[in-house]
Image (cartoon, rainbow, N blue to C red; front, side):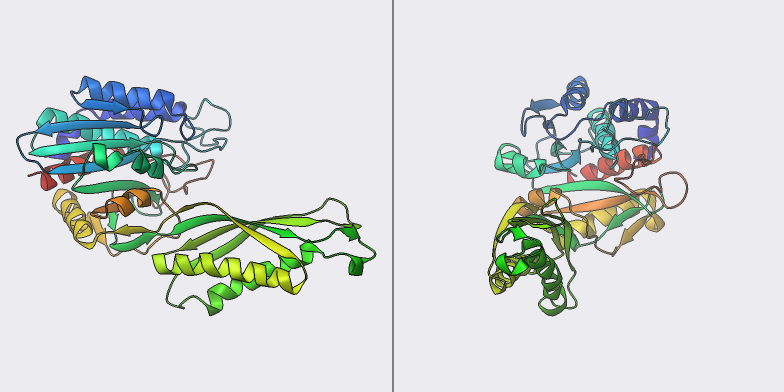
Length: 388
């Protein structure tokens, strides 16, 4: 059984995970992490490609004569958070920590890499994709633009993320839109500054920004289908410094999310229309800037069914959940699925109480080491099932 084989080198996986956790690196700066990954892949006999998206690593292993190909992706980057977990392997780098479990994701894929290199119970080619910069710089998009699937063709592609709130070792699947798009938008309201005591001689951008903030919520309540999920959050409004001075401009920062491509397009169109329309009504102008964005993550139905069946066969029906609620968080694996739609992104429970239950992006979070063997075994089983 795959799990029993992987458990033989569980101590190695623990060492790798803790080493990565102690030395977190931000997006496109994963120099030590990618060097460790490349070293292990080379040691185990993979053809290793480095340098895509600066610090990305792809390990390729071909067994047999089949032309069939498979891609499995793990992310490597950390977050700008000061760790408070108190674990012996806590981050040694100030204001840097693996608060989302990418250290665990990388280690699980390395565990699968070792198993596959030793067992070779498949026929075809597997590309193990270690991606940088998932959190902030859309490393998945960069890899796609730099020719990931042209250089490393994949008939199907899969990715996995841990999820606190689910019992450790439960595998969770959902076809269709599974994770939301995320668009980062700035709205710069241009008014006319003046004395706070004589507002009639000015055009107050703070008032305009306030009305825009309120009006934007009408998009959700009156333009979006009530059965569709969408969020517009104005997380920041910055304008002026003195109480008695009306500033020239106000800068608004928005986070916008949707669970369908059509709803996302509607939101982006209406945000511009509403912001500019509100501004004009006050004699001001609004400049809408799209800073960056991530598409909706859409799982292929057939590949989701296949991935779920692998989990059922490997760990039993009680540990494979099909039909999970979609998440409003975003994930840049969506860029890979946009470019190569025949794939699935799944979750593995990190813990629903006690160990592993702290939510990601929290300074007290830590990846649950109980998942290392299970995740590695899952990727091994999926590879063997797809590349029979």
